[in-house]
Image (cartoon, rainbow over all chains, first blue to last red; front, side, top):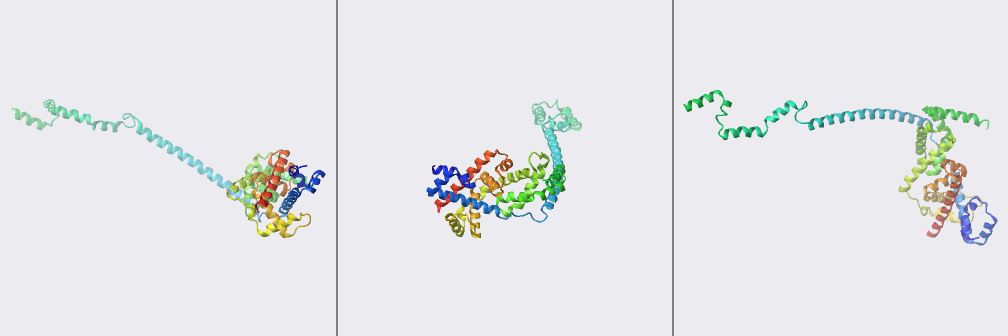
Amino acid sequence: MRCKDVRDRIDELWTGEVPAETRAHLEKCSACQEYARDVGLVRAGFHALAEEPVPEASLGFAARLVRQLGEAAEQGTREEFLVHVGRRFVYVASLLTLGLLLALVLPSSGPVRGPASADLFLAQPETVSVQSDSIVGGGWQENQDLLPVDLNGQNGKGRQ
Amino acid sequence: MASSEPKVAQEVEWIGRAQRGDRDAFGLLVERHQRRVFSVVYHLVRRRDEVEDLAQEIFFKAFRSIPSYNFQASFATWLSRIAVNHCYDYLRQQRSSRLSYYWEMSEESVRNLEAQAERPPAGGLTDEEQIALRDFVSKLLDRAPTHERVILALKELEGYSVEEVADILKLKPNTVKVRLHRARKRMLEDIKLWRQGR
């Protein structure tokens, strides 16, 4: 029997059921004797640990636990309610945001932006340039109808 | 046997009520099993100041899981399983932040230990020797990988049989035997390292 075999049979040393073959090797091998002593030490250490008194539950542990379970259940219900309300708030806020985005993206005509778009259209620069062109380009006579009545009269006198 | 039958029937009734959300019935189960849970937690974690908090968390988990308890294992085994899993998670979290070294032992403990090594502990141990041995094996357990620590604590400290350990850990008995063998061997190798380092 080799030393390695003795170490592989640690469970036998641990339980104290050492076969004759192992015992014969132990008698003549000091290294394995030391190993067997260590096994004994660890076993004794475990035994000492197992005998150590285990801490006991403090007075009223079970009653306190039951009360805390009740509190946790109540808190759970409250949180569930808040989550429910919060979820609805998020839905409404999302809908409002979506509506606002749609209003910005929609074309300038249509039911949402109809009247306001007409004013904007008049203020566009193309309209102004058409009027000025007609004045500068000598279309004075054609634009006579656009002038106020008294001014029209003065013009007529000058020519005569 | 005759006295245990009404006890079992009573426990089945409490479990049924707790499964329907009856917290008072669960409280009765807590009172009956708290000693076992405290013992498992203490032997696995070995920190007196943490035991009650951990036990409380375990019973909270048990109350949440009790509707799924199907009576296949005994209630005590089912509860021990929850306790072991909870402690296992705790130990894994702790391991990253807290390392233990056996060379942190006091000189007196080491002297006592060496005296023990010279003289096999066949006879009775003195108080000092007991303390030194407890200290030493505690350090060895702290240094062991979590899964080995759990299996050693259940077998050597809680005194469960291989079959009971297998039932709690949901393993085959042969797997438990193999893991126990490896854990013991590794522990002895650790002692060798300690001797070499001194």
